[in-house]
Length: 430
Ligand SMILES: Cc1ncc(COP(=O)(O)O)c(C=O)c1O
Picture 1 (cartoon, protein in one colour):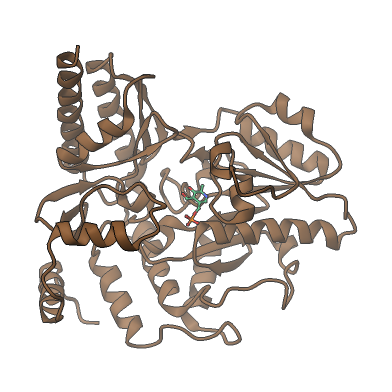
Picture 2 (cartoon, helix red, strand yellow; picture 1 turned 180 degrees about the vertical axis):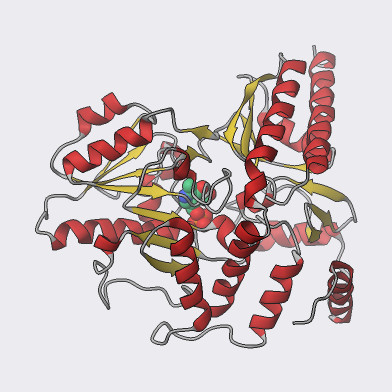
C-alpha cells in the first residue's frame, strides 16, 4: 500500500464511517443496549468508546482519554497505528483466512520471525491467551504421556496467578473466587508466588509442569522475586517437569525485552503469548523448544482461526515496529520514567498510596488498604485517564509501548489530579 500519512488514513476512516448507514444512537440508548443485551459478565464503565489514535481514545460524547489501559496490555502500538492499519487493510484485501489444512504465507513468515526473536524453535497459533495456555497444558501432558510418564499429570501454579477463563485455565488461576461454582478441574496445586520452599514441599514424581508468570499481572503487577525463576528451572529439571511460562501479558516487549523471562536469563520449555502480539488484532501463540516439536502430532490439537493470514500479518507488523523501529529499545527507559513519576505521586499522597512496582511499561500504583480502588479508577477516568485495576488494590498502568515521555508525564499529572480529588472527598466525608 502506498505511504499514506496518519491524517490521510484518519480522514479515510472518518469518511468510511460517515458513509455507513448507522442510525444516530445516543450514549444513553447505547448503554441501555448493553444492559439489556449483553451477558453482564464484565464490570463496564458507563461510557462508549468510538475511536482512537496513538495513546488517546474518544467516547461517544467526544470526550478524549489518555488510554493507559491499552486493552489491558494489548494495544502495544497504540490505536490506529499507521503501519498496522495499512497492513491489515492490505491483507484483508489479499487473503484473510484459509484452513490450517493449507499453509499461508503470512503465518509461515510469522512463525520464522517470532521464533527467531524469542529463541524458541516451533510455534503454534491460536486466538487468545486462554487458548494458548490450553495448548500448553495439553502439550505438557502429552509430552509426559509420550515418554511413558503417565503418572505425571499434576500441575503446580501460583496463588494470585491469572491464566485465563476457560475451564482448565481458570482452574490454574490462583484466585479462588474466579473458580467458585464451576466445579473442579483435577490436578492443580497452588503455592504462594515466590516461595520455593513451599513449592518443594508439594513437588513429587506426579508433577507434569509448573505454570508461572514472570510478572503476575492480574494478581497486582508483582514481579518475580530475585532467584525465583532460576529456582523453578532447577526444580523442574530435577523433577523432569516442564517449565511452562505464561507470557500472555509480559511478552512482546511489555517489560522492555521481547519476553519477560529474559530479565532472569532463564529458558522455559514452553511459553505462551497473546495480548500485545497482534497489537489489538486477536492472536495467541505457544512457542516450544525443539525437543517438544513433535509432541502434538496431526489430530491432537488445532484451531480453526489460529494463525490466519490477517492475524499473522498484524503480528508481523507489531514485531517489526517493536524490534526494527526502535520501540522496544526505549521501553526500559520509559518504564523507569513512569516508575519515578509514580513513586513521586505515592510520596505526595501517603494516606492513599503504599508505593509502586512493576517491570518496564507494566506498572502498578499500590493503594493503601481501605482506599476504594474502584473509586480511584473512576476518578482517573473523570480526569481523562484510563487505567485498569489489578489484585484488588493496585491501579495498573499498561500504556501503549509507543507512549512518549510527554504522554507518561500527562498520565502522571492526571493521576495526581484524580488522587487530589479522592483526598478531598475523603476529607469532606470526615
Ligand atoms: C498472564 C495471563 N494469562 C492468560 C490470560 C488470558 O488471556 P485471554 O483473555 O486472551 O484468554 C491473561 C489475560 O489477562 C493473562 O494476563
